[in-house]
Length: 326
Image (tube, rainbow, N blue to C red; front, side):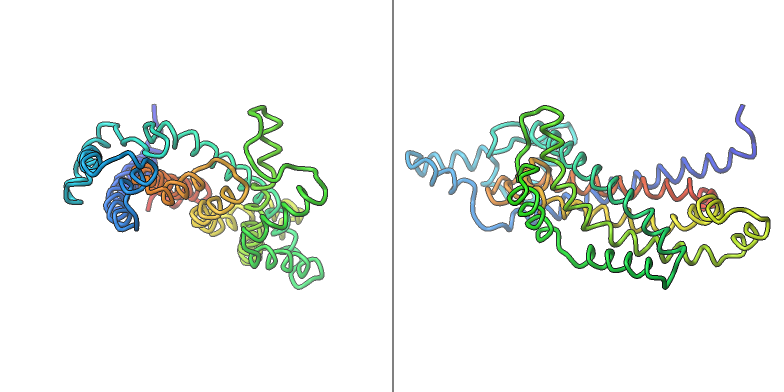
């Protein structure tokens, strides 16, 4: 039986989760309208592209194709028709690939999440020890070196880092492939994943180090830390057992906000390294006037970022149980 003292936090957490999921649905609905209208304003016409690719198509064929794709109807009718089909699980066909868009996008989304997951894990593995090291010795030579590294990471754009990594590790040293997806084996995939993941990692790690350093320095000045030290606890236990958990709360906010930036960086990185992820697919869809593919791809990207923010909110509640009651 549930302890009565735990009933209120559990109820508050469930209510919070339901409210956030409803809000996520509302945002996705609004985004679908905005993106649909925005894509409709893109220059070029997919029918014109089809005619230019096949000179045998006549004007009558063009009119028939417009009717098939619904391009002869007003934009609000096209959107309502698309929304009705989407609510039934039919998100349309890709004109470029001649396949249902979800068959194309879901494997690409998995590739992007694999790339971002590796970059995110590497960024945390690098940022956490560096941020703690700098916070424990503020204004020292070590702190200065960590800050210099962090500023360099923040200042260098992902595309520049990507070019630098390709020139160094693929062209000069020949250790890693410059791009592509590999032969499908695990080692081949990992070899092709290293450079794009490293480019994303270096672009994110500087910000994490800076925020963690500042947050941990502030936490180390709190009364509960002084009390822990007065009890005779070791410096390592005070930092990792008491201060770091509270210092991670504002850092979690930055990490959640950075997820969208990481997704945008993945678009550039995937294009430069030829990694078949969501970023490259959306880019190809926009350049090829593939409306359905671009629309659903952008909505999937938005939904992924919103879910990451929801996960961050749940992490707040784990780090600070008082948040469950708010």
